[in-house]
Image (cartoon, rainbow, N blue to C red; front, side):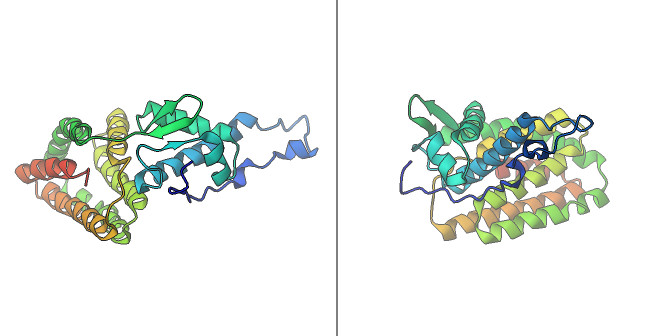
Length: 243
């Protein structure tokens, strides 16, 4: 674990205590809770924490991190960390380094451009169809989500912004009624958000604010059924996602 890249992501571990039955309170009418559920709960919390650390840059691209080292920081064993890291490896965020741990993937500009292209191929046609069919009042209902991205951007916190950004896009795509589409698009969106190299905090905040402003502009264009502007905004938005 590199000393220069501490991971300070809090993880709520209240759900991992021993079940009541483990303290001698088991009865035959009340079957013990499966330990597997508890383990999945821990793994899910660790996975969320690692994803936030990837987006924020606390886990540095190119660096190798060990399961025991990260487990010590999170206050858990290495097992849920390794399980979470295996999931991140499947998503392309890290790669396994035998006998050492996991290396955070370094994304190239070409890879980010490919992700933007695929996202546009999926989402642009959907948004154009929604612009033709969804009433303006429905788009107005999504303004609080767009405003939430602006508030998150103002803090300069990439992890917080990433969550609000994806929530906004999921809400729009959910109007299509196609949950498979929402799931696939959200996965591509997540992959386009990390890992990110650390940069100047002021420049980073400005980039996030510019990205968030496009959400409000997109809602205005969707409500006005301005298909040309909708298509242009979505493509530009995705092209700027690697800022």
